[in-house]
Length: 336
Image (tube, rainbow, N blue to C red):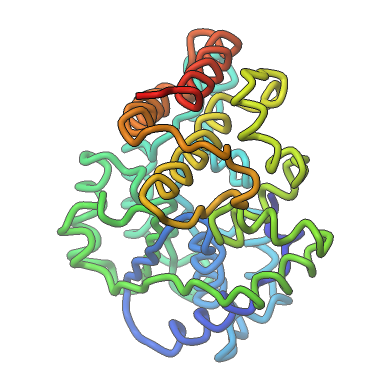
């Protein structure tokens, strides 16, 4: 989803204004997925590098803002897993792009140490435009220990004109030494009416907004991604009954990772119901009338967590889907 097609959420704008009023060479934006860490990180680096910034952020009109829009800013280094770089339109290094084009390897799903070393070298160079330099790392938890240690020394002794923003959806996975070198900011969870109004402003029908927001666990960015994925609210509501019948076709066009995520949400709500709690992702009427025993749900939850570790590279996606649906059906009909 490109940034240009998404209006900046008011809660992101408010956080941007607050953070720009504070000083610091490194920020750590932290919180669950779907709350706008990447959007806020981009707003900060835009303002830092802008030729005519205001207290509310970048001007959006200058040559610096344009260079960021077209992904060619000489003083901005973006560090992400290659799969996300490509999805968001950020160019890879010439060598990385050549390796992928030549089928020598697949795009990485973590931040490669080679990219971090390039970023460290970038931070030590003189600013090309004279406004300092910025490094954006997202999602920061996708650094392995070698990559994180390559960044650590630069965070400890930063060159004078470089600023960092690390945006994370699992900050607890970062090295404590990385966290301690940054100013921490916990992402704001916006009010329900704010989220509903913003999502409707993105072109989502009013009657669908509540369903998508529920399916996303109340996370607005995730709700927008769901709405733009082509899924319908009706298909989401029908999912529990479909898997209870073993209906694989209800999930036929979903990736294994998406199927596992949906089943984990269903399992979560059934676990909550088994101890008297309220569901989070599905409406109560969507769930099976008879809740499976706690033991069966716990075993299912563990099996889904194990499957999630290999969801990005299944041996056979079709067989994996059939196995996941069969497992769900067996759990939903379990007596013990």
